[in-house]
Image (cartoon, rainbow, N blue to C red; front, side, top):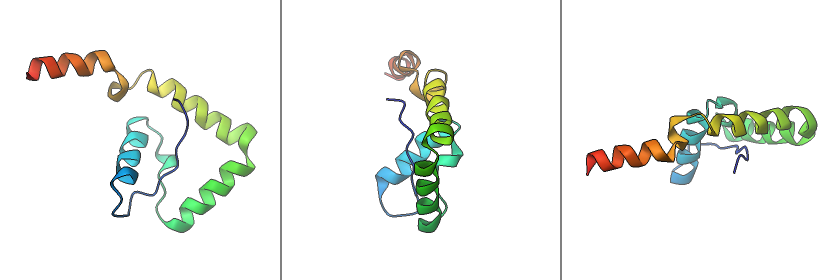
Amino acid sequence: SGLPILTYPHTENMPSRVAASICKALDCPEMVSASFLDYEERAVYLALNKDTVLKNLRDKVCNARLKMPLFNTELWVKHLEMGL
């Protein structure tokens, strides 16, 4: 959907680790937090800078998802078919 997601993958929560992998695939390491405090600080920072930092991050995500292999459905299907 092109929406930036902030995550803290150092929990036993699988979705947070998947989210971190997606962030890395998008080349957006700034969306992966190193601690709960870092997570909170990043969230506040993004909330206070919606018109600049958050907008730029959203643009980065939207552009990256159109170019990154993880989001290339046609290529994924081709590889799946080769595997089958």
